[in-house]
Image 1 (cartoon, rainbow over the protein chains, first blue to last red):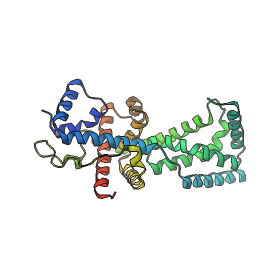
Image 2: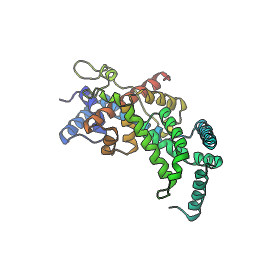
Image 3: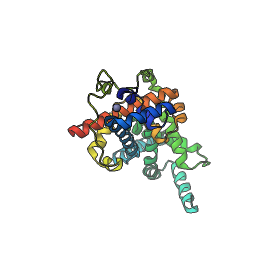
Image 4: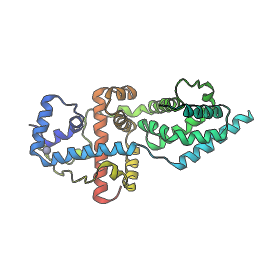
Length: 81
Length: 206
Ligand SMILES: [Zn+2]
């Protein structure tokens, strides 16, 4: 029988639908009976959503300033040559 | 779809870049840096991504001379960033010798009883969706810190996988890992993020 620890090992495969039919079925059966694992799967899924929301970029004015500076330096160095 | 005016604006900008005009560079930097950062972040943590994008702009000063406009300027810039980011990954690849035999995070493994049931089950509750959670600046900063602390290959696996919307083959090719090892990398990275968010919500601290 699939225990909570076994399920935790393959939780991402379940979330991404990468399990074979048999394993998928045992996970589903376990989830029907186990509140803690339902919560774990939910949390892991939410963490994944968080990563996706997080990596969808923000603009940093400080970075733009640094690039301006570097480009200006490189341009004037080039003109001297 | 590009309009005619848009095209000619881009042509003017390209001419400016080719002649080494500083104002043209300032304009292009503001226009294209956000997209370039997004590309770099597929591969790298924030600090390395910034470094990579910065280097790219310096490279562009010379490389733009060879730009023939067959692809748009944006596509061309994105390709430069992607190549540089991949090189950066390859140079730092020692970490790939990570342990692929255990997919459970050691910290999480400690939370089970010997019989395999939860001893310390997850306490975390998400009452908000991801977008509104990310508006919490402290959580966002904490996530940045933890992402930076992940082994580079785990982080790249995670970011690339999410960015490519689950195209595993692409990610395996870029990272040069097998499909089953990618599964381990992904799972290990997600568990770390889960543990981080749990601590953050319990203690309010990173
Ligand atoms: Zn369970």
